[in-house]
Image (cartoon, rainbow, N blue to C red):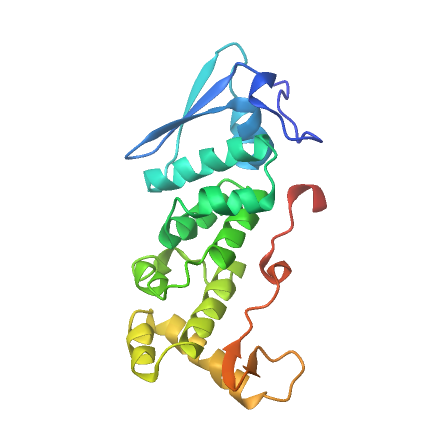
Length: 231
C-alpha cells in the first residue's frame, strides 16, 4: 500500500488537510487532523498508512484504558504545537489545566503511541508546572502503577519526591512515604541515603543552601527522550 504519511521536516498545520481521525477510548472520543496526528505519533502514522485514503474521517480505537483527560491533553498539545507557541506559553496553558496524575498517564500514552516529543513536553510539565504544593504526591497515589519501572519518568518522579521530602517538616515525611508504593519508597530512601553519604561529591543532588538542605532534581536534559529525528 502506498505510504501517504511520512515523518515531515516541519510540523503541519490544520489548514494542510481536511482529513480527520476520531480517536476512541472506553469513555471518550476526540478528533484531530490526520497529518498532525501522523507527524507526532509513529503508531498512528503506521495505522493511517494502512487505511484507505479516500475517507475524510477515520475512527481508531485505543485498546488500553487511558482516561479521556489524557486523550484531550494530547489533542490540546497537538494543536498547540501546530500554533508554534513558545515554551512559556505551553506551561501557562496546558500545565495549569491538568493534574499531575493526568500528566503521568499522558507520558505513558505517549510511550504507547510512540510520540517522544509529546513525552518530553509532558515531562517538562511534570517537572516545572508545580504549584509549590506538596499535594501532588497524594494526587499521584493511585498513579504509580502506570509508571514504567526503570523509565526516565520514574527517575524524574523519584527525584521530585526527594525534593519534596527534603523541604517537608519531619512529621510530614512519614505521611509522604506512606503514600508511595513500597518499591518506590525504598528507591527514594536509597536515593536520599546516597545523597547524605555523598555530601562532598560534585554531582551530589543534596546540597546545603542558606543553612537548609535542598535537593537538586537536575536539568531537564537528564529526563529527555531521544526524538524521532535524532534516532
